[in-house]
Length: 239
Image 1: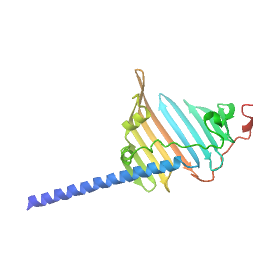
Image 2: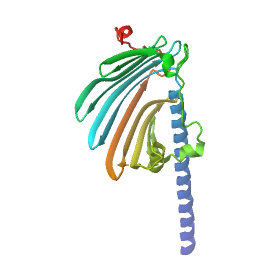
Image 3: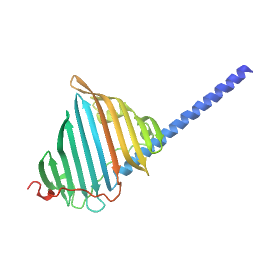
Image 4: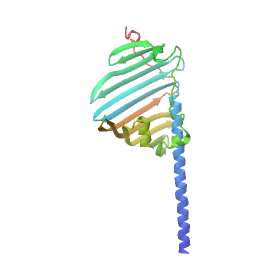
């Protein structure tokens, strides 16, 4: 009788563990597909405001903040503003780029210029096209991008397959990753927030350098009525 009860207990335990494993895989698949769907919707939106930052440490420290305004519901309007610092020294107006009325405007560390949008491949009246590099992936490949996932309401935490991501970033093998974590906030099918933490090493010739990178982004007014800000003297740049 004791042997029979032990056998039944073992079978029940196996069934329980199998069910838990299946539930975990289902949650991982659902979370992965939800993330890629939200990413696609955000990337292909006609208007949005995105604010973010990047902090990279690899021997020296480089950090920056960026702000993107996009509205192409009618004519294409865009502003991309970047400020940064290197080794703690701030660099203002590092890179400010605008598109308006078929022209592009650039302020690179105080040097201002303007040109026709056609010079960067934008024909009159043409809008920006978003390229989603993940569209060709199968559902299985999307799920396999992540080692594990946890979901709490609108908050998603992913542990990314570091080896696969390293190969995607650098197929030559000069970059290796030991850790790749991502936090995402998804609301109403839209990717509202993203934080990516990386840790690894890159090699140049025979030298190797450890690095860490933290990138954050917040999206607002996706497909909303976004007002793109322009400097008052924009038309005079480069003249």
